[in-house]
Length: 329
Image 1 (cartoon, rainbow, N blue to C red):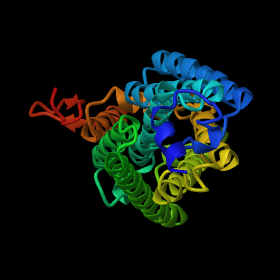
Image 2: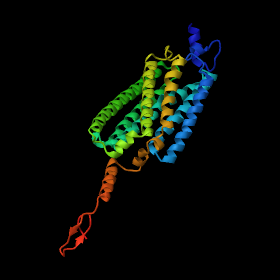
Image 3: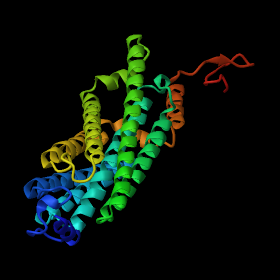
């Protein structure tokens, strides 16, 4: 027994003394399944890049660009592991990429709230619309730092148990922080929805907001983001359970669980955010992106209202009628 443990330290491929069961995952990752994920995430990567450039949704493009690219690279790492489960390169690629990239997918979801608030009505929000982006993106960055640092440490720890534990704890902290951020996000969304709905019943929404809410593409956009949120949330809960049991625990060594709760969940989220891209499903997001702040949008609307107001006629000192918004000739 002791001899086997000693020989596995330097294992680089599967042999009688280095069985696949002794690897961290304990199995050969499926080649066909991971090639499928590489292909579909690759198509989403191309679609997100083209749509982002076409509609100039720059921040959204950055989030989904790195999110989809990371998923492609991460599953390439699992393709490498399918050939050699002892491959340190394959392990390092997949652990680093697949741990952090869902945070970029979540960032794409966070970005939509600001623009929905601006379009439906900022007065129903407890926070200024611009704060949503800053708060949740900063939270996402912290999550990325924790998960990225943990993944990097775990990937290079080799057989150093202390370093492996440190990497695991950092990854768990990052994922837990991401879950907390997601919960806060959904609570703010629920609060805004309740307040906006209550005002809609009192006919307090603007005609443009009411028209938007009736459009099929906006409803599909909202439904897609809700489904994407649930998928990312489910994935994060799975990852916490997977990591909490330590390396080589039964959850970590179940490929079915990994495919269903990691790869498929993130694929669902990515497809939702791609098929219902805001460029064509929520054009207002593209328009808002060209503004520096929500105050610019309010100023634009105020100017439009002023221009649509008919001139007020007045009589000057000579008794002649004159027109103008302020009665000046």
